[in-house]
Image: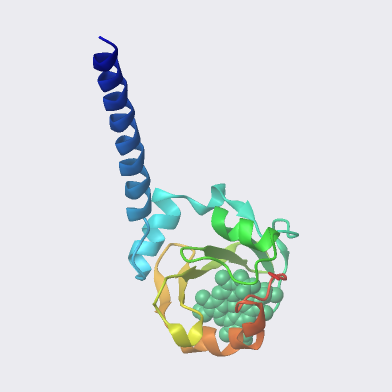
Length: 166
Ligand code: HEC
């Protein structure tokens, strides 16, 4: 009798655990490829960035500089937030930073994205870069030399200008 119950309980635990592991793997598989369309679908549909935290220390529509826009709102994914708050120095793989670029009249001009993809571009911090119009059209994507050359000025801050990450 005792043994039978043990088998039932062990079996139940096994089923629950494998379900949980399956779910977490599925969560991981949702992450997009380093492609403009896949990334846009992810940040607007699968995991809408406007529900994410703002870059630590920044509010909405703070004053920006050339080339990004007169006003900026910058969002970070949960793993990126944790790394910035802990001043880890480097954001982990799969981190996103998403910046809305607004015109002086506060209408949205573009959305620019940095997405860290393991092994994507070892020469430039493994960041995938993208720029979308306000309507979601891809303006730039990939290993964009314009983005990389300017952001290289802050290579010691993980290619990030907005605030210290270490
Ligand atoms: C001439 C320099 C320059 C170029 C080119 C540039 N950026 Fe930036 N970027 C900045 C600066 C400066 C900031 C900080 C915000 C501000 O003050 O405008 C920034 C901030 C960002 C941020 C927020 C995270 C961070 O690094 O602070 C993202 C995301 C971003 N840029 C993406 C891009 C993408 C994508 C491109 C190319 C399409 C690009 N940038 C091109 C200078 C540049």
